[in-house]
Structure formats: structure tokens, C-alpha cells
Amino acid sequence: MTEHEKLLAGQDYDYRDLELQSMITNGKELVHEINTENDQEKRQQAMHELFAKVGQRLTINGKFGAVYGKHISFGDDVFINGNCYFQDSNKITLGDRVIVAPDTKFYCGEHSEDATKRFGIREDGSHYLITYTEPISVGSDVWIGGNVTIIGGVHIGNNVIIGAGAVVVKDVPDNCVVGGVPAKFIKSLPEVKND
Image (cartoon, rainbow, N blue to C red; front, side, top):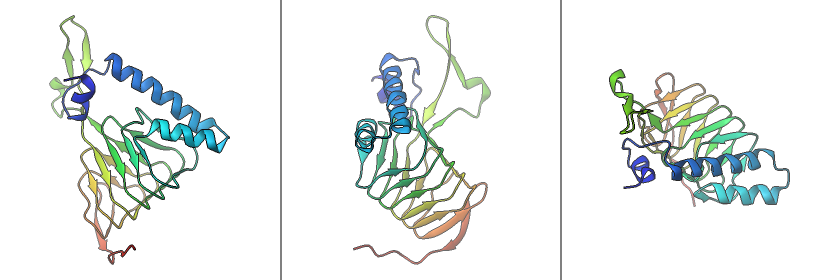
């Protein structure tokens, strides 16, 4: 199993792996191009090179960040506002008609609660940070408020509003509003009927 396969499987992986480092370097270059390119055609081309899937009418309004980029998939009519960060050490999937307000963070990586298991020692005696990853998925017709944090392993259902400043650590069902730290159910929403 490659280090990339281990990463996606949520296993302990070696961050220094040459394939992973090459992917990170490529991701940084394409993120920089998207954040600085004024030619919209070139910017769209960079988005298609960076992301695993780009739906129709993807809008990234302002600067954004990602680690790999290639683990991120966007549905149709997705709007990402400024200063959003995708720590995509696993897959991050957004459905159709998703609005992400400024300063929102998606974090797929995590470390052990046991402090003695956060660092390992390689055969050559060097130390390394032990990281595990889990995917994040967001359904369709979701509005994520400003300064929200979403943690790896979370699935957000369809027709959801996440209040500004929330920290989402558990799955969110369809048709509801959640908010707070940690995010909790606030109220139900009427089901959305899309044609």
C-alpha cells in the first residue's frame, strides 16, 4: 500500500513520502495560480487541474487554500467565499448549490488523544508526526456560515444551514439549522424540492 493509499484509508502515513510531497508542491502552485491569475480562462483551467471534480459554475471569490487540491470535489453552482481553507488530507466533497461563507475551514487530519502516540520513530531513528485522516462530505443546498470549522469524518446532509462560528464535529442530518461550539441542532427546515 502506498503512503497516499494509507492517507486515504485513514491509516498512519509518512508525510515525507516523495509522491505526497510532489502532490503538495503541485497543489501549492495551482492554488497560487488560482489566487493570483486575472485571466478567467486560465484560472478555470487551473481549477480543473487542481480539483478532482469541478461542477458547472464553480465560483471561488477571493483567496483560498488547500494542501493537495486533488482530493476536493465540487458539485454544480458552488460558491466559495474568501479566506476558506481545505486541509484535504482526505476527500472533501461538496454537493450542488453549496454556499461557503468567508473564513471557513475544513480539517480532515487528526492526531491521537494519547500524547504518547502523536509521534513515531522511523527505522532510521528520525521522528515523525502521526496523522490520521477522515473524509468530509457536504450534501446539496447547504449554506455554511462564516468562520465555521468542519472536522474530518463529518457528513453534512442536504438542505442544511450551519450558523456562523460553529464547530461541526458530528454528522448533521438533512433539513435543519445547526450552530454553536460544538454545533447542535437549532431547528428543522422544510424539505427542498429540486427539479
